[in-house]
Length: 200
Picture 1 (cartoon, rainbow, N blue to C red):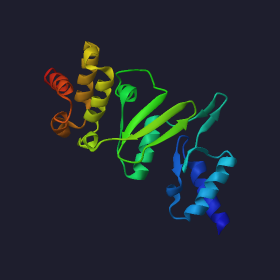
Picture 2: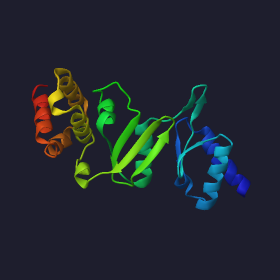
Picture 3: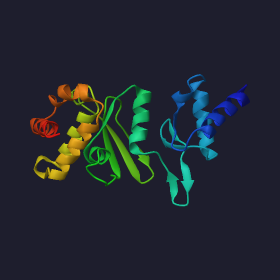
Picture 4: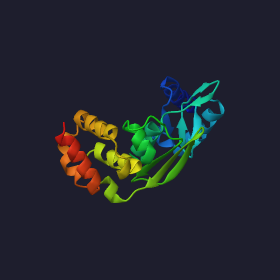
């Protein structure tokens, strides 16, 4: 029976794409203690890489080291497992929305779940427990915009930044939530978004 379980789980990992994230809870059909030991054994075999307690990744090994999933993908998978929400902050939000091409080495997210820090090779993901007001938005664009624009700073808003806001707003499928969400944004960001909407 155990050999069958080992084969089932091994096959699932082997057939998954590189970058797939696995938790002990990913195999909830089986005994948790047994799965914990089994994943640890698979790590020793090089099938998966442990990046945090109970968090494993099928990472591709190259001559430059392991290729991990992006910070956004990993944070999203952890949030899904924990039934939590996450919002990228600072440079991470600015990069995700296209205000910056620089991928931060240290990516920070606000979360409704548990706070944690995860090392992905030379990169670090920090998940901080955020205040409820950060998660009162109905959509995802405006809260990310708020975090990105706060990072850029009110005094550093250029025509290029305003143009990017317009592009994001014109391409979003969240038209029904924008009006509600901008009322939760800081006044200067709210005015900036409204200006971009009226100039479209």
